[in-house]
Length: 245
Image (cartoon, rainbow, N blue to C red; front, side, top):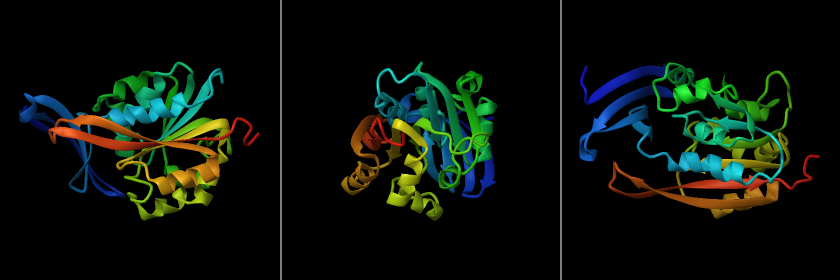
């Protein structure tokens, strides 16, 4: 085995070839990077994950103070940084992570990725292999309790609201799709969304039209692979306290 590079897993998925690899980065004094590639393109890296964590911090931080224990959905497991950041909130009593790709869940169960052991050991966290967008079109995210309402939904799957991994996701970002999602939130509930780009003013207005309140955040971070500062966006939308009630 090459101590500088190891392919941990490689599988065909409905989205194409998915690869999990671990390597030492010579330019960073041999720092370890765990990376995911889809069809030969880098999808995520353990070297920078600030925006994924901020998705949870900003989203859950927008919930009303004193609102009791929280039931939370995370759409997209990835390397587990959003889920781990959500579990850092003691108010979270249940966290359902919806992930369409079985290999990604398997990596966590086998402890191949940075947050795998932490997530699988936490009794509040459960993985559900399913298409997040199909669940959002249907009866929701709890198969045992259709139409169950949640305190927050945190989503990190597509590149941006307009650039999707799968064209079938597009209807989720329309006013009708967002209204369906809002129906699964409790009064005062939050929908937060990661984006590869700065928040788009037009999409923010669309969120405000559905949820009432929405803010866009630019998350800047050091990108050691590029040797520069990079950024992502996070949208946070919140229903009024009396909505859906």
